[in-house]
Length: 258
Image (tube, rainbow, N blue to C red):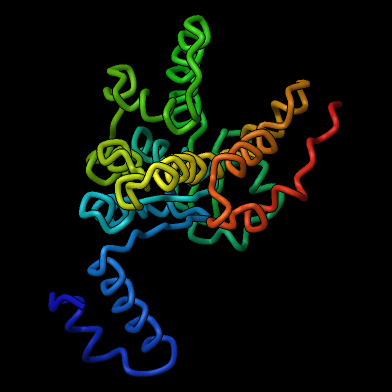
């Protein structure tokens, strides 16, 4: 580990049980990067609402994270926090809320994630209005983009930027956009591997939207987006990557239209 104040503290105090495991993991992380490895990070839970971007954005800028798999909520909630941070409400006693308390929050359009409420109008609707314009313009031009690319584009929108309420350097979505996270840059330059890595980097971002977008689209009569993408991933990746089994393509079935 580098000998900064944090690592010095860990070296001195983290000696046993989970503390020692954390020290070992940090050292392994550093060793992996020093040897030219790439790091894939996964996010679940309300991490963006917990403002993980304060540290994650800097990790992205410093080249310590090269790909991200996350829930759709984590991706969009980073932007919610970016544009509506001042309107968030903390509910420290959230475990004691009664059904009536929850109903009162709902009536105020406050969406609770554990101890923090996200304001619907200031966060979700503000982004939806800008997104809708971009989606309609893209549809008119026949443009096809991945969901994260649409989010990246609206981050450049003056209509959205005027609503920024935190320092943009603390948004991991902005950091990812500026870094343009692509596994391709760090994998083998051979033609087959490069082609496969391009697909993998797309796949990394697509996974966070499987539940958010695929199910509603299938209900509208559209072929399973997830099945189609996973099949294309399998076809594009060389056999030696042995991805088919790990992606579970053989067990993916298109949902029945309803």
